[in-house]
Image 1 (cartoon, rainbow, N blue to C red):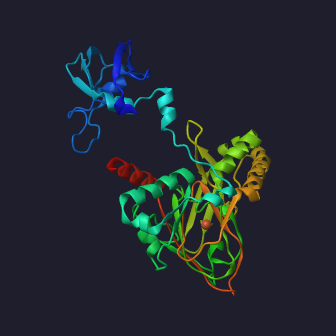
Image 2: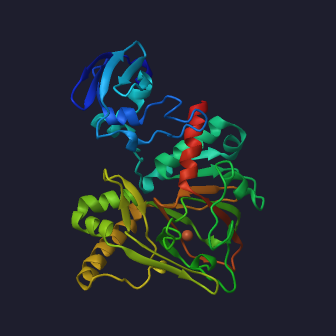
Image 3: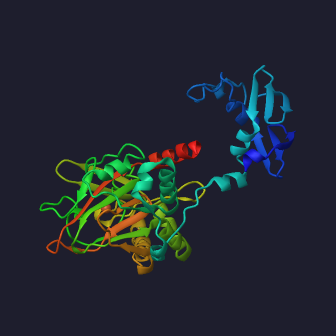
Length: 376
Ligand SMILES: [Fe+2]
């Protein structure tokens, strides 16, 4: 790892320096990057660790180098304007932006299918609530798999929000701070009926759909009503392999989503599949019930439907669907922007089915995981 490495040599070029490490790795840093990231108290606020240096104060694109001194655990650079920057070498290695270092920093989700049932990512409520190591183990599973089953959560109203608060504040939506999934007399959402729900992501009609969803089973004595999960990232990768043209269409076309009732009219348009500049999957927005009338170029409508049908067929393949009959005390936690959820129809006359849910943002999950990793 980085801290075990030392810098063997530093070779300067016109606009950068090439550090060669004891393990053979090369890190090239541009001088402007180094000047911009100077960690001295004049350039980086000592308390807040926020940058106070203004890159526009450098006359040209390149700060002028005066001298570069490689010490045991530091790289000291003096600039022609008299400023001196001292970088710890372990910090430089950690922030190396070579191709291989950037590749190593990418999140690598563990893709899964229905067979994950034989080895579910799960954890005990006690472990999550009691200490930092249990909390971190939970969040690691959540980031890797996109879902975790928390077992033996007390079947108490509001417990779901206490568990979510282990991570951060709740994310409120038009459904409130938390919500009850139960069949209701005058539902404003199909979730509040006893109907089958096809795999979907919640609230794709928001600019930022909620990240992590919590569904806590308080009561379940009804016939049917199994919860289902599909790895949306896994399905997207299958689509990319089987029908690359369809994958590109779903990554490109902005699809309108809308929820409206008496008090709300929340609308947003976004692609079905979102990826970052490296091609890594960031998000799946998929919810037929909330898809508004398509607002696309005439020539894009048929290609969209074709691509959408291929993707939906993959999502509905039985070997992609994890079906779980939640028991009272089970708390299903999943990344709503990756794992698509649904449920089988149930018979509300046969007994109660009551889940309580809430959301937190994925930024909060990743932030908590980083701070816990820093502590342990
Ligand atoms: Fe839902």
